Image (spheres, rainbow, N blue to C red):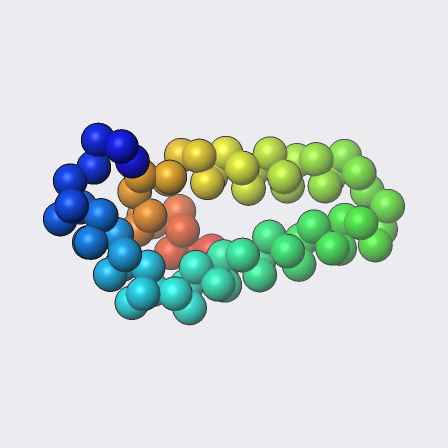
Length: 73
Protein backbone atom coordinates (compact mmCIF):
# COMPACT_ATOMS: atom_id res chain seq x y z
CA UNK A 1 0.00 0.00 0.00
CA UNK A 2 2.98 2.33 0.24
CA UNK A 3 2.84 2.91 -3.51
CA UNK A 4 -0.86 3.74 -3.48
CA UNK A 5 -2.01 7.23 -4.38
CA UNK A 6 -4.30 9.19 -2.11
CA UNK A 7 -7.16 8.80 -4.61
CA UNK A 8 -6.68 5.02 -4.68
CA UNK A 9 -6.65 4.91 -0.88
CA UNK A 10 -9.83 6.99 -0.64
CA UNK A 11 -11.44 4.72 -3.23
CA UNK A 12 -10.58 1.63 -1.18
CA UNK A 13 -11.98 3.23 1.97
CA UNK A 14 -15.20 4.12 0.17
CA UNK A 15 -15.37 0.59 -1.21
CA UNK A 16 -15.01 -0.86 2.27
CA UNK A 17 -17.73 1.40 3.61
CA UNK A 18 -20.20 0.69 0.83
CA UNK A 19 -19.52 -3.07 0.85
CA UNK A 20 -19.04 -3.67 4.56
CA UNK A 21 -21.89 -6.21 4.73
CA UNK A 22 -20.20 -8.32 2.05
CA UNK A 23 -16.88 -8.20 3.89
CA UNK A 24 -18.55 -9.11 7.19
CA UNK A 25 -20.24 -12.04 5.44
CA UNK A 26 -16.84 -13.11 4.12
CA UNK A 27 -15.42 -13.12 7.65
CA UNK A 28 -18.45 -14.95 9.06
CA UNK A 29 -18.19 -17.57 6.30
CA UNK A 30 -14.65 -18.48 7.31
CA UNK A 31 -15.36 -18.20 11.02
CA UNK A 32 -18.23 -20.67 10.67
CA UNK A 33 -16.11 -23.13 8.66
CA UNK A 34 -13.27 -22.91 11.18
CA UNK A 35 -15.59 -23.45 14.15
CA UNK A 36 -17.17 -26.47 12.45
CA UNK A 37 -13.75 -28.02 11.83
CA UNK A 38 -12.74 -27.46 15.45
CA UNK A 39 -16.02 -28.92 16.70
CA UNK A 40 -15.48 -32.02 14.54
CA UNK A 41 -11.81 -32.27 15.59
CA UNK A 42 -10.82 -32.09 11.93
CA UNK A 43 -7.50 -30.30 12.17
CA UNK A 44 -6.49 -31.11 8.59
CA UNK A 45 -9.62 -29.37 7.31
CA UNK A 46 -8.98 -26.44 9.65
CA UNK A 47 -5.46 -26.13 8.29
CA UNK A 48 -6.79 -26.09 4.72
CA UNK A 49 -9.41 -23.45 5.60
CA UNK A 50 -6.79 -21.25 7.24
CA UNK A 51 -4.52 -21.57 4.20
CA UNK A 52 -7.41 -20.65 1.89
CA UNK A 53 -8.37 -17.68 4.09
CA UNK A 54 -4.85 -16.26 4.29
CA UNK A 55 -4.14 -16.89 0.60
CA UNK A 56 -7.30 -15.02 -0.35
CA UNK A 57 -6.45 -12.13 1.96
CA UNK A 58 -2.91 -11.88 0.62
CA UNK A 59 -4.09 -12.11 -2.98
CA UNK A 60 -6.50 -9.23 -2.50
CA UNK A 61 -4.63 -7.05 -0.03
CA UNK A 62 -4.41 -4.21 -2.57
CA UNK A 63 -7.60 -4.95 -4.49
CA UNK A 64 -10.45 -5.42 -2.05
CA UNK A 65 -13.37 -5.48 -4.47
CA UNK A 66 -13.03 -8.68 -6.45
CA UNK A 67 -15.23 -11.51 -7.60
CA UNK A 68 -13.58 -13.85 -5.08
CA UNK A 69 -14.70 -11.67 -2.17
CA UNK A 70 -18.16 -10.91 -3.49
CA UNK A 71 -19.07 -14.52 -4.40
CA UNK A 72 -18.59 -15.83 -0.85
CA UNK A 73 -21.96 -16.05 0.83
